[in-house]
Length: 307
Image 1 (cartoon, rainbow, N blue to C red):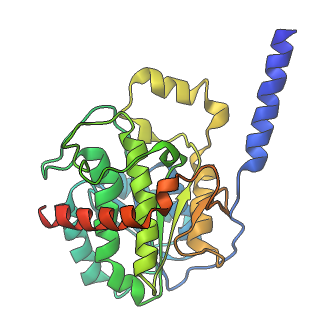
Image 2 (cartoon, rainbow, N blue to C red; image 1 turned 180 degrees about the vertical axis):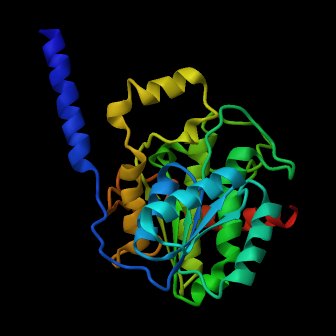
C-alpha cells in the first residue's frame, strides 16, 4: 500500500515538473548576428550554442579548456552545418584571461548581439585564484561582471542583449560587500551568495544602461558538470535519487534561449520557465535593494582595479 502511494506521488511529481518546464518556441533566425556564450563546451552552454547555431548565427564558444572547446565547436559544425562557429579561449575565473579574450573579440568582431554569461561553478571549500579572488565569486560574479562591462560598447552597436544565467539558489543567498573575497570567512552558501550577486548586478546594470537589454534566468536544476567539485555522495544523489527534480541540459537551455531570443524580455527582469518571475517567492528581497546593488557595483569595480 505504502509502495503504491509512494509510486503515485513520484509519478505525479514527475508529471507536474514536466508540465511546468518552459519551452522556447521562437522561430527567429540569427543570420548576421554574433553571439558569445561562456562555458559552451558542455551542459546548458553547449545545448544553447547548438540551438543558436541552427539559427545560422555566428557563435563564439568562450571556454576555458581548449581541447574541449575545439571538440564542441567541431561537433556543433557537424550537427548544424554552420561553419560560423568558432572557439575562443577564456577562463572567466581569471580577470587577466577575460581581458585577453575581450582584446581578441575587439580585433575580430565589429559588434556583439548577444552575450550569454553561462559559465558557473559550485565548490565546497574555499579556493583562492592566483589573482587573490575566491574561486566561486571569481567565476560566478567577477568574471561575468568584467566581461559584460568590457563588451558593452560592442553590444551597444547592435542594441544587444546580455543574459546572465542565475539560480533559484539565490533566494537564500546574501551579499556582504566587505567579504567578496572571503576576507571574513568562507560560507558553505557561497554559490547561493554569488547568484544573489548575479541578480543584483543584472538589476544595477539595467538601471545604468539604456542601449543594451540585460536579464537574469534560472534554468532549473540541471544535470550538468557544474557540480563536479562537490563530494561524490552529492553528485550521486543529484544523478539518481533527485533525478526527477532535475532537468536535462537541453531542457535547461530552453529558458536561456527564451531570454536570448524573445522580444518580450524586460531589461532587469528575472525569468524562470520562460516567464517573468520578478516579485515571486523565488526572488530574494535583497535583489531590490538599490543601495546594496550600487555598493556591490562600486566594490566590484574597486576589486577589479586591483587585479
